[in-house]
Amino acid sequence: MNYPARVKIIDVGPRDGLQNEKQPVAAAVKVELVQRLQDAGLKEIEVTSYVSPKWVPQMADAASVMAGIDRRGDVRYSVLTPNMQGFEAALAGRPDEIVVFGAASEAFNQKNINCSIAESMERFAPVVRAALDAGIAVRGAMSCTVGCPYEGEIAPEKVGYLAGLMKGIGVQRVDVADTIGVGTPIKVQKALEATLAHFGIDQVSGHFHDTYGQALSNTLAALELGVWNFQSSVAGLGGCPYAKGATGNVATEDVVYLLHGMGIETGIDLDKLIDAGQFISQHLGRPTQSRVAKALLIKRAG
Ligand SMILES: CC(C)(COP(=O)([O-])OP(=O)([O-])OC[C@H]1O[C@@H](n2cnc3c(N)ncnc32)[C@H](O)[C@@H]1OP(=O)([O-])[O-])[C@@H](O)C(=O)NCCC(=O)NCCSC(=O)C[C@@](C)(O)CC(=O)[O-]
Image 1 (cartoon, helix red, strand yellow):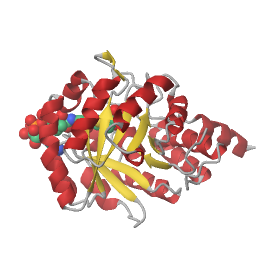
Image 2 (cartoon, protein in one colour):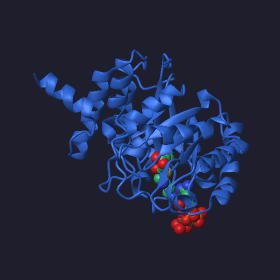
Image 3 (cartoon, helix red, strand yellow):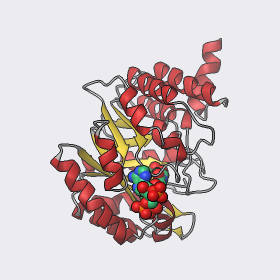
Image 4 (tube, helix red, strand yellow):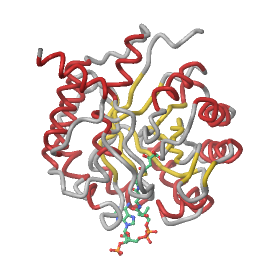
């Protein structure tokens, strides 16, 4: 099997990981988390989202977080913008990339962003145009590409349909998300293949939640197809506010351990990443969800 020699990881912990926290996390803590992630070698970080504070109160400090980070030229900072209102608010923070986000499931799309898939494309299209005109890159996140909390199993055709719509409005690359972590390798490969009918291999990333403990297997399945971009959350933070019971993203530490063990380069320092995970886990007052971090912390303690 020929696996990619190098993988790029987008850590989505500051956004996807923290958005569901009930207690407010101070902007300064989020800023320090971003700092620690870039110190660990992450070159792409999903920082925050410009969404309604009534829907996702934890992201209400998006502007302060973006203003507070110590930016590096070699790091790409992305933010979620579901509509023109979010995009216009995001501009002051100078994101390198904006993310529009839809779902392969009609019901989830409605719950998450309060409109149908077709309506979401009408909202996204001007956002995508404005971003590209401003020299900002555009990613499309596709939720529920394997299963949906409301509709159950999702057919790959629905994923292909959404990917085609994203491509049609000018989105440059897309995330294939298993939002509720129900996917298994063959199903995930089918969702990825349906997406690859519209986007090149360099433009497709895997975004796997670990609710059923399948995320690393699904990562391997994606690597087998040649996918080399992945999203994960430091310390396995997260859960989606509109997917009850869904746990966090696969932990970045676990993905890095898998990749390094396979001889795949990431540019990430696992020890520093574990420290970043400890920083945020201690702040949240609960242990890391990363199995690798737990094991290596015990080893460190001697
Ligand atoms: C999309 C909307 C805004 C539509 O919400 P809406 O109610 O349909 O919007 P609206 O245009 O009718 O406006 C209603 C109110 O929202 C305000 N509003 C409108 N837009 C914005 C904005 N951008 N920023 C701030 N405020 C906004 C607007 O100003 C107004 O305020 P009011 O007059 O009532 O005070 C809403 O449904 C929303 O914010 N949803 C939250 C979606 C979200 O953040 N979900 C979690 C992220 S997606 C995810 O986690 C999945 C992913 C990406 O990780 C991949 C995976 O694993 O699946």
